[in-house]
Image (cartoon, rainbow over all chains, first blue to last red; front, side, top):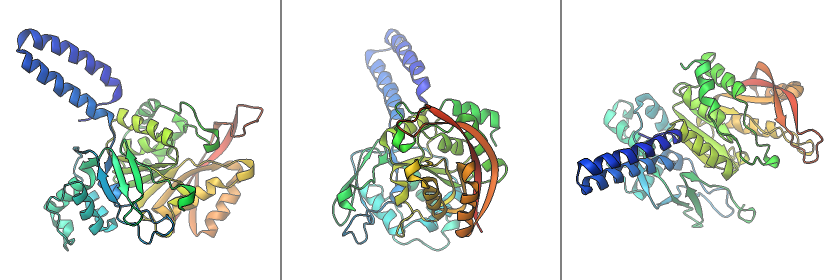
Length: 173
Length: 211
């Protein structure tokens, strides 16, 4: 799980202490492995990423000469998975708000097509399996850095630290 | 439901602006005010638990974080300033909130006719910029956007001096108005050459809802 910043110093201290202990009681290889894992955990806490649910809402239609501007193509430099508690009712309520085709497209862009059906089936509210897959795609797959590309003008909207910048320049409006 | 005191404790840790931009009216919503706003939204109206929420002009994320802590399922923070969003991002991590999304957008662009955010949110909360002498009514512009985005309730702060005006506008828009509380706080000066560094103002905490 993600740890808050204020615990990070404490964690570094523990890391050093445990490295010393491991060094004396285990082989060097194990020490390196443990150190690498601890750094990986610390590193993960630093970066915020953009979820695919957000992608489903974004369009470049504000730009002049753009007719649809949706869906935007995700060009992700890095993608990660996180663990979010499954809330069945919440996911069910979100479904009607989504553009299903755009969601499939987004999943493809980040290589997580999973096995989402091409067309949203009726009675999805009772299909726990589908809801869990949706939960994963919408909330647990995240884009770290990359951009969202307008399908018509190819204009790139950057995503940095998981925050997309959708602001247009004066000459683009 | 988290108790008010605990919520206040969490919000004390929210880091504020390092170099607030005057022209954007950047200041943190005071902790005691934010905590009371958020707590009322859930305890009196149940507008947070399990809901999808937006904070328009989220700044450092005081209201956003409060909402997530009080049970909002998914929260979205919008702000035009990248520096503010970076601070907000750090605050979200410190509070261990993984269900919040941040977007760098102009709030005024959110309610255009083709926006996919229209009626997307259950609840919208905002502490809007009040605008300068030459540029009054920014808070009403933000409010208008908030009402387009919300399926149900909008919670906002407006200067008490403008209460009659705000109430009339809401009536014109066919929206129900409830002034929940009057609060006083210290607003940093938005005029470049203003004599005082800050001024005490009275604000109304108002709930708007679609009839």
